[in-house]
Length: 170
Figure 1 (cartoon, rainbow, N blue to C red):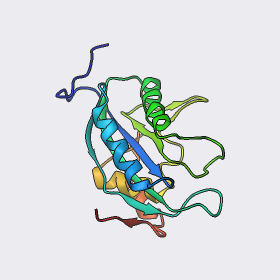
Figure 2: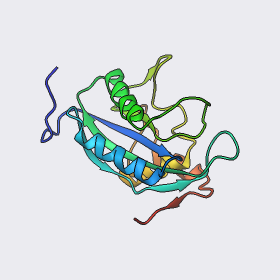
Figure 3: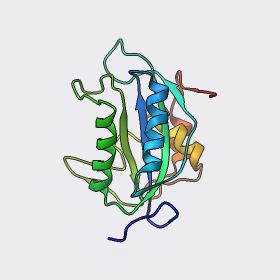
Figure 4: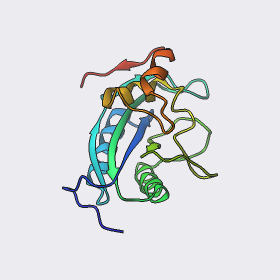
């Protein structure tokens, strides 16, 4: 595999969901974006604004800070997943409770046009079309984005209640 350089625009277009609701969530997401941009095999093409959203999952959690990053990489899907999990681990991510509070969550939302369904990784992300804190930032990055198979993100966004989702101005 050819090594991806910072100046290279070759590679697969991917979208990464970022979220945090512990230990200064805004800083956690901002630092994760920096770490993505500094990774030797990932080129950060851009990112959405940050959003505050109510938690999905167990009651009593603090609100989340969310964003989506657009990247290009020559890493294979599982290699990219490993890189994302290394960043999560550097942020002391602990997996104690399904959909529980976390310092950092990085989800591989889309990996080019591929679909993948394994025990370890499902792409597109299985909840991509149901979550306002994913759809809105994706549309911010590319309002003409389509999922593998041709479904348009903007159509899902139109049908998704925005709830308490609020764009942050930083």
